[in-house]
Picture 1 (spheres, rainbow, N blue to C red):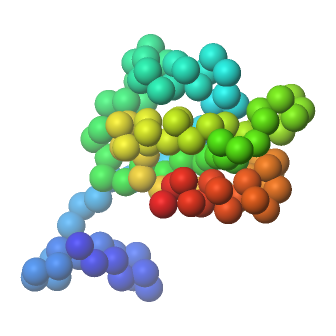
Picture 2: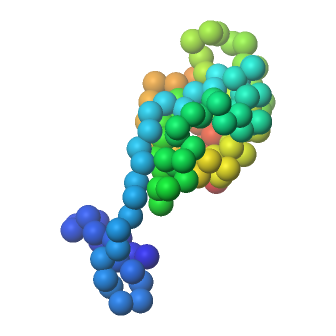
Picture 3: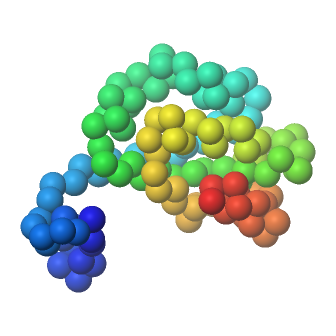
Length: 123
């Protein structure tokens, strides 16, 4: 698959025919640790409701990661600072979340070290 960013077109690699691609863009994904993280890791389908079939039918699923991911930081720093453990990342592949947006007001809640650890965990 090739993407022509100028024409905003996606082509099949072999013969450059345009192909249809389904993209889902969702809002904030923010477990904030604790019990919510436990439900997320268990993949409790009640938690995701109608989103799971939607993600499954899409080729690419974009989401806003509204938390830093850093196992070394204490999650009780402040109720307004969102830092979660790396175990929640295992769910991204399971529910086909492909592209994480980090441009939000909580990505630096763990400082630059938390941002760097988030990027490392996502890689």
